[in-house]
Image 1 (cartoon, rainbow over the protein chains, first blue to last red):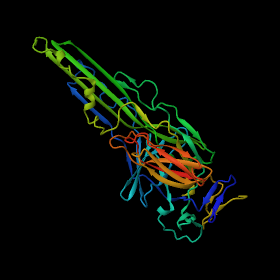
Image 2 (image 1 turned 180 degrees about the horizontal axis):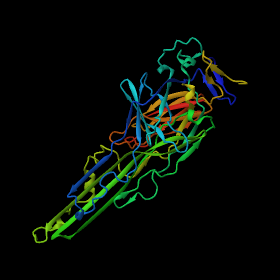
Image 3 (image 1 turned 180 degrees about the vertical axis):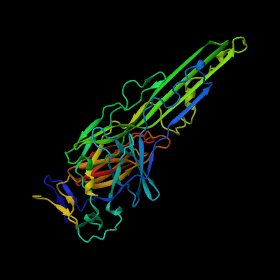
Image 4 (image 1 turned 135 degrees about the vertical axis):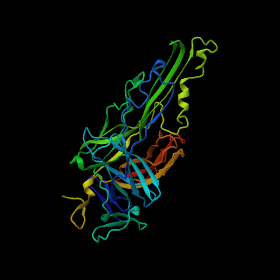
Amino acid sequence: MTYGLEVKNNNNDVIISSDMFHYHFIGKYTHTALLVVPDLLHGVNSPNTPEFGPTLNKGMENLPAVGAVYEFQIPVNGIMPPMCFIKPGETGLSAAFAAIVLTQKIGVYWKIRVFQNRATSIAPILYCFSPLDQVVDTSTESVGMQIFNASGARTFDSRYKPLRILATGTDLKAPTLAHTGSTGSTWYCSLDVNSDSTASTFEAQTNLSDLIYYAPTLAHSCQEHQYQESDSGTYNWENYSWIRGDIWWCFYQSIFRLASTSTIQANYGVYARGHIYEHRSDSVSVFDTAGGIQMMFGDMLITIIFAVGGVLGGSYRPYENSSRNTAEDVTFFISKASFYD
Amino acid sequence: MAYGYAEYDAAGNLIFDSNDATWSILGTFTALGSAATTYFEFKNVAQVRVSRMPITEINGDIQAFTHTWSIAYNYTGSTHRLTAASPNIEETTDAVFIVFGR
């Protein structure tokens, strides 16, 4: 540089430069709503009696619990979204996992959703930062330092609590699958998150409960369990036939937790879940020889199930076995809440 | 501290310290999911961190790809160049890239 200010540390890293912009604290926010993604449960019965096929597990039985979505509203003051650090309600190896799953501009605020694999008694808090041109200039402080670039724009202002990053890492990656092993048997699904957490380490800090982290979630996956069965025979002087097909599924989002003062872990939480089924049955008297019972279900295949409930139209969560972005590394940053409280 | 730079507010609170691993913003840009590639040049510094922040959902389907990225270091004498690539232009979310450096 030919002019301006540049501050370096003993590793020759640039800490402050008038050529670079710096994030500054714009506030800490508590959630304005606590949401749960509604279950998708849809079934067709005709009729629903034990003699015409199994009637068990036609609800959300055996599916793992869905996680909690904390919604925040961060005021907009510019075109770029805020950089939001999560101060989790829990830390350590038994803590809930959490990550930002939605950043969306809605009029005069950014809607931020933090997904957590379960609600906690202490809710997550967001510590938010923006470049200086998006910080509302309200300080009356007369002490400090400002740095301007060649265009005359402020790039650093000590009055607005510049972001202090204590540690970072680039290799935080979700497990390949949320659930490993069997996804269930017959009418019983097994879709809980059972993958081992992955981990990334960072420079050791002190006071775990004071740490905050920024790590946008990228990976998600969907896993399902399907089962279909049919039967026909004679019961109580009637020829009968039935067919039942079910799909249970979970949609998982990758989320994170501070496991120690030097470790951040990744795993999944159940973001949404569903169960759709169709159970058809019919019967005719054994003395009625006009119609063949076998003809009734000639065109009834398991694919009929997917045509109900708007699922085929993509109006709800996906139910197929699939995943996205599981190979992508997440860059994370660590800071401390007490710097800004 | 024995050396370096620290800054305090009027109340004596430490608000900035060269002992931190602080990273500065080299730039931010939005990569559209519908664009096969997006390029962004930024100041040539020794260390770089790149963060992706998805900012949209694919309509009707929350399963979506995110951009992959790579950096051509010393693309020009004074800049590096980041290339963000959309794996699937119909199923990739828009994303804000934040490039940090020091």
